[in-house]
Length: 161
Image (tube, rainbow, N blue to C red; front, side, top):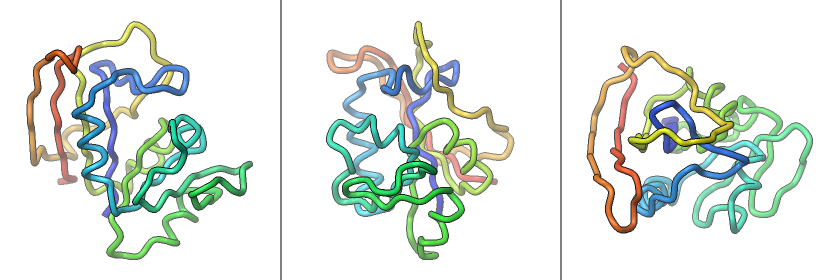
């Protein structure tokens, strides 16, 4: 089972200067609850953006053609080579960045998106465009803005049709 997980603005933006665009504590809590105990696959720049390095209580896989070792992570030169090390019953979460999302899209069974109801002033990383006709919404949960969340958002889970 391969799941793509991301927080995506209305224009498809996901980041700026190797940082997340939004501070949404509920999104971070959801990310942790979904990925804990599972495998996370990311590009090297995404790994570099993690404030404390490898994510605890998860198998961290980083894709890099230049770096061979990273603390707390397994490093592979391609998504294909990384996936070969995963067992058939392993739940895998693709956590970024843009090029890893794009490469994993044809293989994904599920999308777990936080759709942020906002368009950022600046962005340099974008979620790949996808055909919504290929996906079925299985869960939708709306959240308005509040004292801890400056933007309204919704958690939307999709499965491939």
